[in-house]
Image 1 (tube, rainbow, N blue to C red):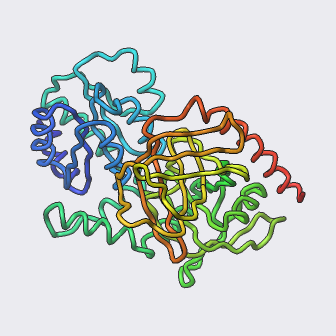
Image 2: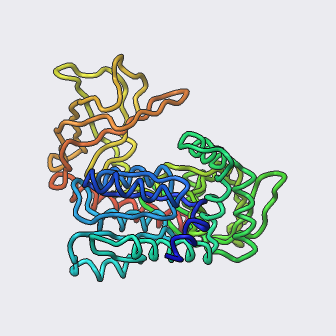
Image 3: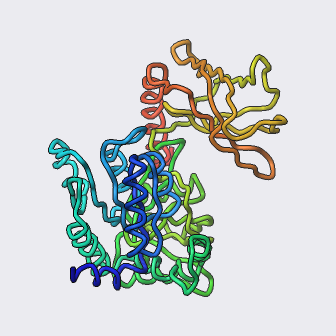
Length: 388
């Protein structure tokens, strides 16, 4: 049991997400894991696990495979897209041999068949913690910074939020990336079309809280259009939002980024393709039989939902409320008439932005439209690159 004592001494700064749909197993495992780790969060299925992971990017995830709503394989793929450095341990009552190749491809740390002995689980978790410490990823630095002499879930969460909003910490991580020549990517969207290219940090001004980066001409054009950008790297615990951009040189590929901050919600996490509709569309929103009277503009549309803006918010409209939407995208083949639920409401000084989820994905109606619209946007963006 040497690894048990070693694990207790090494794991106290780390947090763990445990995903299991069996209530009894979930409760017992949570009690066990709390003996080793600073904080243990549990989820009862893959969908809840993904939502909790997006809120706090856990360095360690332990998950079952056979679960409702979102199975373990799908959960693993989504987590690895968000945070490739996260170590994932799979626990399953089945051999799941058909998944082994996918586990390898997705970089799963270890697959264990239930029931798992305490000795075996301890050995694997010890190996996970040692690996994380050896890699010395920035996510570990953030985890250890979040540790304090306080105890309890509330204190841990408060400390996490404190560091999430710590601009000094952000620039320390960026400085480390610059010194170690770490890779980063810039993400932008042109009318829903994803534009992603590599970039490198040339200079950091800690006093003015700005950085100068080098990236491709294509990315510069996308950033120029959107006037913001998102920075993603395995060395960063969260996506970084760049809220103010100054183009320094198209020829040299240099840009200055200011008003940098961590963000928990970004277009980088999009799970479906979204496109801006072409002009000439019509949209109407209904609550029961009553048509909502407000200027409505479509920001983007996907197979799963639509993002709109409204000049005024009708009284009583709230999250999870059921509505009905009719959308005519300009041609009879592209007509949507479906129930929706309000997923999100954001308010600015001039408008309300609302995300509506279709009750059933509109694959038949929208797949052709979205594909065709993407091609049109690609041609349009190429024209911008060529100065047309």
